[in-house]
Amino acid sequence: MIEIGGLHKSFGAQRVLMGLNLSVSNGETFSILGKSGSGKSVMLKCIVGLMLPDAGDITVDSMRVDADDRKTLKQIRRMIGFLFQGGALYDSMTIRENLIFNLTRHHKVKHSEASEKAAHYLTLVGLPDFIDKMPSELSGGMRKRAALARALVIEPQILLYDEPTTGLDPITSAEIGELIREMHDRFKVTGIVVTHDILCAGIVSDRAGVLKDGLLKYTGALNELVQIEDKEIKGFFRKPI
Ligand SMILES: Nc1ncnc2c1ncn2[C@@H]1O[C@H](COP(=O)(O)OP(=O)(O)OP(=O)(O)O)[C@@H](O)[C@H]1O
Ligand SMILES: [Mg+2]
Image (cartoon, rainbow, N blue to C red; front, side, top):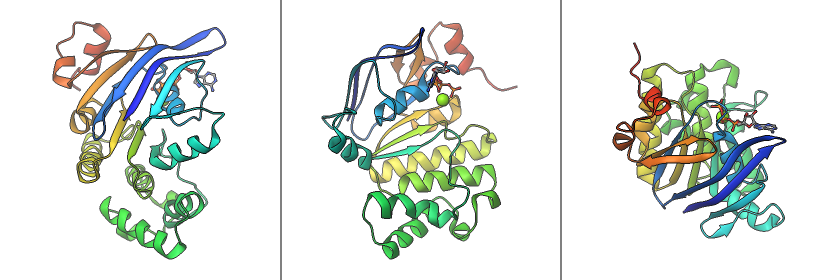
């Protein structure tokens, strides 16, 4: 369970988050829609303690995210898989090394076991033959899949995704969405998916919300959000030409 209460974050005079509240239950996947610059990535970074909020409380499975409590923060981070905006694989490492790195370093998994897990998750995302390739040898969509496998390989209870489908064609986006849905159903993970992609949100989420004016407004099922009379929200649901 992820609970956020009264989250505030400003950069100088720029107020980004202004008392944001969110509660995501165990096993639930929540999508966050919002215009560019509305604070979606900032919110995700606050959850994993990569960014320090000015005020507010964040708890993950009843553990408080607190930069001063390194031990708890480490414990929380071990439970969370984070798919960064842009995928962000390590360019100088093979796909296998990318997947193994976190496991051996932070999860104390033996190299041979980590390698087996890497192969297993690459197969799940449809890339079994790319394990010893460099990221530059993969297409954009494949890199997203590999990044997804890297987030999954630690077998997290919670997965946070920052724009998992940006820049992909609608077919590949839908495939990535289906993959996320399948993983969540299979492993009962709790997820937050930040996306502009309404197709992806429709596939993966149980509920969604719109981040606007520093707050999560209009939370509900996607088919409820469609009904809301708000120009910005309507913009997300506009059908492509
Ligand atoms: N480290 C930082 N220092 C200063 N300002 C920042 C920092 N990180 C984010 N911001 C500002 O906070 C605002 C929200 O940024 P954020 O990255 O959360 O947007 P976003 O909703 O994720 O947008 P996008 O959809 O384009 O990824 C932006 O105006 C950005 O310039
Ligand atoms: Mg962002």
